[in-house]
Length: 185
Image 1 (spheres, rainbow, N blue to C red):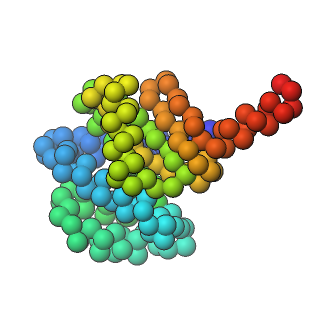
Image 2 (image 1 turned 90 degrees about the horizontal axis):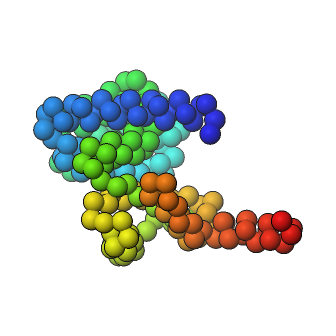
């Protein structure tokens, strides 16, 4: 991992920790969590929105206006709105998805949950997510929180990480293993 990625993750963790502490003090963790899950769903399901938020060519105030329009259709907690405005002011809106990921990790740790990161090549539908959830809960118990990500580079299949365990059924992994086997080592 490069030092740039590490510093970005550290920044995302700091923002997420601050938001979690504020939400905890205000006793609105569940509301903020639902707000962030909604924003993350929009982020994951809308390629154009994802590109817009990450684009350095679009200024932060324009990104904020778009985010406000999206969130205005849902009941978004005031703390979440203020937090998004802060990210825009500090020009950190482009790492919103990382902050949401870190917030989920912090929330899971505080509740004593086991966090499972599931990576797929395409966005999974609710039936697929429910099936994965049910199977993993049988393996790891009921205190399991799932975090779904997409990565086109895995081509197909899933990569599931739970603690120090990893289940890799991705096509890219199978291709790499086949290449190694064909080389003879």
